[in-house]
Image (tube, rainbow, N blue to C red; front, side, top):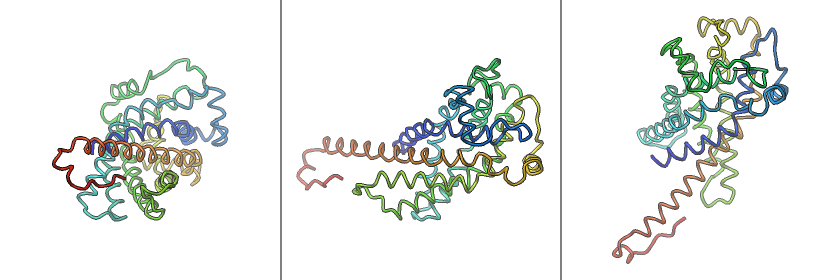
Length: 305
């Protein structure tokens, strides 16, 4: 359990470093004004942010996901592992149910974290140096929102986060389980790491495709009010206004950058987690063998993998 927690933290940190620039592009595209769009598409958005705000502009808001990683990965890996043990059998359906449970519970941390991330990513849009920063950092952002709007304010978008994360994590663990079984990812396989990279990356893509329209609405609700004016009264109002102005294509806004991000992020996360666990378990086995009492050494020693 503790090992899974540590591995999840390390893997999650690696994933955030790889994928945060893509996430910034996704959020900018999702919430930009359709009447006066700043960006023509994914590549243009990348170019504009780098040119106008420098490379650091792509990493705006990274403090929030980094701060929340420990808690989120502890919850996801802990809940998913415990749920699988409770369910008993390792089947694709149980993988989905355990993943969905983990996704739902981690929303307690995920929602405020993503609210701060979104607000930080939208701050100083199009400026190399923001003339007036509303928020100093992610923690300051949450504190200011709490003082102004209370507990409800820092949990803005919680319902849409639940609607995204619950089925999203279910699909994520289900897809990973099916792919690793199909590819035959065994420890002795010399191609295990490439297979894990592929399975992790494709699982991330499958998860995002299954819930992406909900993510668009979540981003819009969490970015609402940045300029001091609230456009949306509810989830239904946000959906209605978005459809009226932009049509059904609104639900795919930013999808390209999301999928470009999903593969390397999840491939990196799973590869890092797997390598970390393999290394730590090998160290544990060596340590146990070195500390065994003399009486036990009379028995045939098992060959370590």
